[in-house]
Length: 111
Image (tube, rainbow, N blue to C red; front, side, top):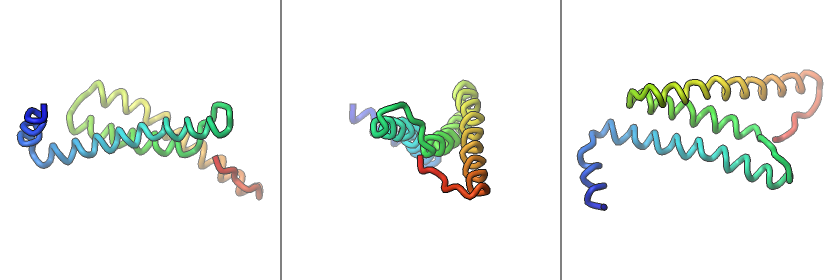
């Protein structure tokens, strides 16, 4: 098994290996959003979606889309592309809410 893995790595170009690294990092980042949400919910003892969830979603989604684009995987690109719209919209809502709270003189809550 290790020999197969070593042979696979040796057969890849430097560019491909960099993109595999981007893909792995993106997947870790995307997975972190679930960990952040779980911890926040456990602390609150109710379902909570913290602000950081949306940043990890957007960052991981952008990187996963870039990786899918590099690999030219239309199914993966479509799936990530659709999610990016939702993540970006939620980040917009977070920023809009903070901006309206600041305009009202309220202290923004830390989610």
